[in-house]
Image (cartoon, rainbow over all chains, first blue to last red; front, side):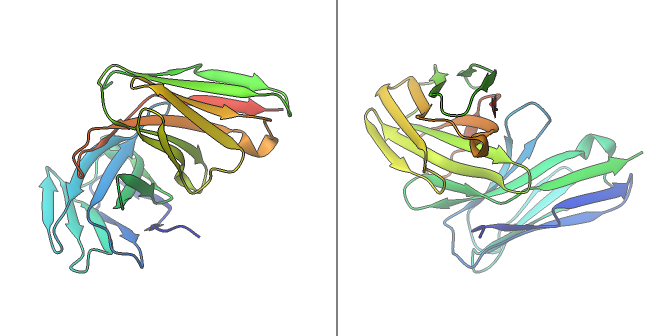
Length: 110
Length: 113
C-alpha cells in the first residue's frame, strides 16, 4: 500500500478548464512537497508546504496543506497545454526520508 | 541540473548478472537517494545515504545494495538482476535543511531480459 495516495491517477481535460489533484495519507508529515516531471527527466520541485492550513500560489497553481498535515491539494486554474506532465506529491518522514505518491498524469488538450 | 550525473543512462542486462549504477554529484550535498519509478507506483525509495558510509534502507530495498565511499558518489548495485528490477532508476541529492528540495538526475533506464 502506498503511504501517500494521489487522485486521480490520470486526468485529461480541455484547455481553459480548472482541475484539482489530491494527495492523502493517514500519516502526519512535517511538510509536503509537490514536484512536476517531464518525459525523460527527473522531477522538479514546484512548492513546499510546511504549516497546517497553509496555502501557496504559483501563478495559476494553488497548493494547500491540510490542517492536520495529512493531506494536500493542487488546484490549477485555466489549464494550459504547457501544464501537461506528471505531478507528484512527496512527504518527509523522520530524518530526511522522502516518500512519494503514485503521481497524477495530467494532459491538457488544446 | 543541480550538478548530478547518473551513469549509464541506458542499460540492458541478462537475468542473474550483477549491475552497478553510479550517481555523481558536484554539490557537496550530504543526502543522496536512489528511487525506482514504475507505472502506477510513482517513485519508490530503495536506499538513501546521510553521509559517507552512512546508508539506510527504503521501502523497496530487497535485492539492492548501496555504497558511499566519497561524498560525491553513491553506487546502487543489483547483485543478481531479475526481470522485476526492470525500471527507471533516479538518483537525487538534498541539502541538509529539512524542507529543502530533492534535485534529481535524469535517470537510468534498466532492462533485465
